[in-house]
Image 1: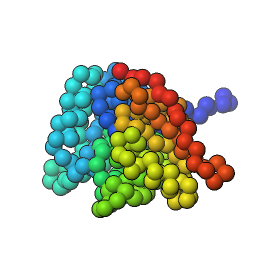
Image 2 (image 1 turned 30 degrees about the horizontal axis):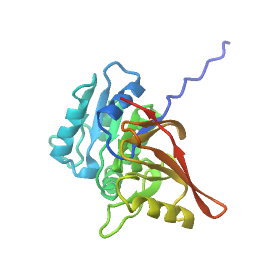
Image 3 (image 1 turned 90 degrees about the vertical axis):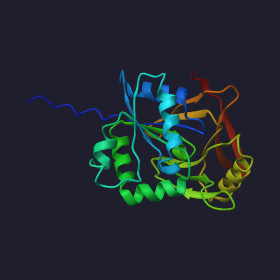
Length: 238
């Protein structure tokens, strides 16, 4: 009898930016789908389904050959007639908004969206975002989601280690990230300036990109009790 070959497993893809996941990053996300006109779903959960954020998303997509749509989380069953799996697994890419990561995670877990996103990732649907939309895919990272001060938030853990967005834009980010990694409260991980980003296949970093001159990414770790911040020079994307 002929030996049957195993079906090839889809490549799991995540594209993040430290901030500013606008037209350049959405274009790259669309390319990663391999589709001529991919369906891109916007999940504005972290920003409370705010109308302004949704309008910005459609404006960023306007020059691109994509089919954009939005999935709110503040819904009711009379008008939301499809399940999360029916909606999200019909997309070619899913873009998570910035905003409050702690609230985003709580809502996703309460609604079971976290489970569907894991299935989407396993199916090869491209995931991504900036700020809360980048932090959410890691084990943990720094967030401004609580009152008074930056703190730690635990996330989905698709990507191992930690993350700090807005590395060049908010002065408190870098020293806190160093402190938390040195103390062992956070695992080593990746930091991104606004408009600089990272592309992962599975859990392996494949490409460092930037939509703004001078914006960089970093890998931060501890070696012999000292913080080591390694600059990851990006390739420009249009």
